[in-house]
Image (tube, rainbow, N blue to C red; front, top):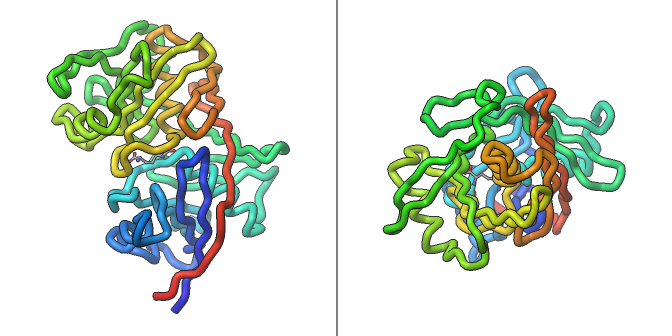
Length: 280
Ligand SMILES: N[C@@H](CCC[C@H](N)C(=O)O)C(=O)O
């Protein structure tokens, strides 16, 4: 049996995409996905994304990280999925797709310039371990709290975009030993569901540099949900504007946290790398 796949990336955050619409369950298990993501013995990717048919007959995204864990959402991944759906010729209204995810219904739109803008929904503040809608907490200026990791106390701000993020504002992001410290954050007891960790250097209120250690994937070149969570944390800590460019190792994402609706919009590229077929 052979199974077609396509590999896409969003700013170097790369994914194997499978047209899995014929079934309600992913065609590959977590263990098979780990093998496919292996950069030496497999295709190589940060995750495997399945386009499924949802119970209401609509579209559904499921994803396995490269370690086989299943996150609720993936920002770069859903841009790649929208491009994949567009490339497959799946009909859409105004080039918008409504996609069920573990973080609710998410709506990416293909832009005229080839980029993809995604309505990522509302962020949640998770500092008190009880999710609070940020609309209710909107007046709070400083929401960070101390966590001891690797023998040092770090001030962290935790925001959920459906999946968990922990942001730390630093003076010089290049000086952070990401691999050493990122894995300690990921498995710290303060984060029972593990966490994605973002180190953020504010260059000015409209431009920040961010480096990420992803839960289940390690250091990646970009993280879409992480970029959204970073801007939310930056606004709540009065460090950046609601409309902000996030610079990542793989390039820039434009993030806009809308004051009116509390929704976060993310704009960035999605690129086809190659297609192939897997013999099983
Ligand atoms: N790279 C993604 C996030 C993928 C999921 C993440 N590793 C998690 O476990 O939450 C993005 O672009 O958002």
